[in-house]
Image (cartoon, rainbow, N blue to C red):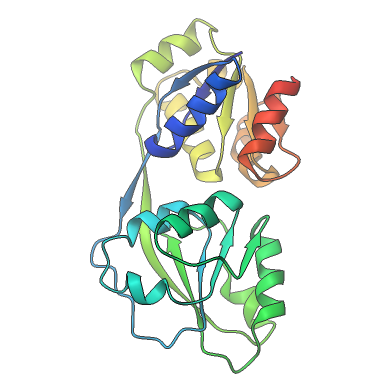
Length: 238
């Protein structure tokens, strides 16, 4: 199939390569770029553990002077790929790897105890889930530090616009709600919304699919698990 990948560049290149290895054509056109936050302020703690839900957070703190100290703490992550990236960044084996944020919250709740030092959540500027509330219900504390932000493009790149206008794409991959919003917004700004909604849309989760459903997309497919491998398998099955 002819597929569009709109992820930020580094992750998008890896996904495009995986699609090509499976025999698909992949057009890579990032509609967001990831920027590390300026002057990331991470206090001395103490922290009971570090929580990471995206590899973007690990990249953002790589040059931070507190990174080595954080790497010695227990780590909770979402997804096996984030766990692998954490090991590559100098962290030890994760204390728990959640399938998604809900699963991670359950695992943190089974590990931490009321009265423990707060957990430290290294987050994006616009996180898809707020963790403090659910953890507070269990008597647990977490401090969120924004370490990166996603900046959306204003319009579709010309080659993507041309492909959409020609009906040359069979499907589009969406890995986050924010990237799906960027796709809809860029299509609207480029007067291509109807064309952009016409292909099948392969989404990592039902939450990711939300902006596409709201815009009127019909051919939405949701991965059975919020993992890249499950999304690629879904495409192969189609």
